Image 1 (cartoon, rainbow, N blue to C red):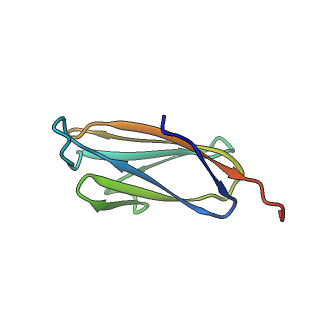
Image 2 (tube, one colour):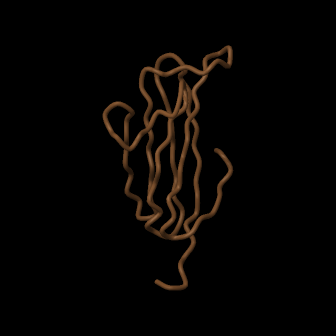
Length: 100
């Protein structure tokens, strides 16, 4: 799992997946999927080419921006199929606001 980080309630958090073949050359996988679990336990699944929230930045590089609208731990998994098959997971903590 990737290292965790902290942010503040109301931030926009960008998570990113970079996909490479066995030669370490960036490739566009057949399918790119982002799963995010918020602190309430709700899981959303977004797929590149189907959901506009997944953006292709360049060859093999994709991101999703998340509205950090709940305090607590958020978890994500980014994975692909086909050429460039890979997976990564990470988490981040949204800090409580002193004004909520």
